[in-house]
Image (cartoon, rainbow, N blue to C red):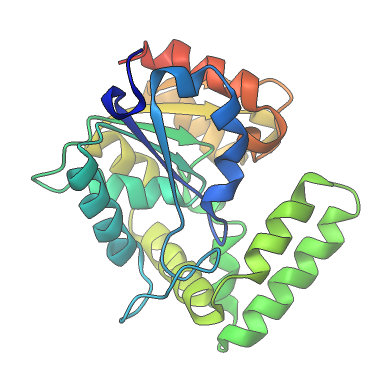
Length: 239
């Protein structure tokens, strides 16, 4: 590839409560030889300023859309609930986005196993405290979650809670996988061991292009960056 500025842009969107740092290890892989990697810290997360209004899927999608237009990005890589955000951004009439690579993104309501629990709380601070306690317990047996928990700790409580509640509402009225499939060419990367049965069934019926990440955690950019990078190079064909 030529100079960095001549490479096509790959916008990287972190999942619920996470930040662009989750993609840092990809900078040292072959993927960075083909693309200018642009990880985003969405408003309210990883220390980024909050939005002036509610933190909803649509509001965050507008931020992603504006970035994609400014950068001329044709590909979005979206992790977990950010797959819905990417879908809404790509569906806008003037979006340059042609392809979404979904990293175990939400396909059915069952995938909102982190974000959707926000709707069980009436108070943002209470939800964040309970969510962090849950993550700390999980980190005792799943060390990869330790980094995630520390990033969630930086999230604005209201932004975290509002996004989670909106993700629950969205998934109760729409099928996230169908929204993804309509928005752009969709490529789903996943480890079946991490996915809900309902989502695996939907994926099998959908005919969506997919590739399996053997042995990866829910955060493959953290624990298997080189394997993930090579898989993305393969499925994207360095477009």
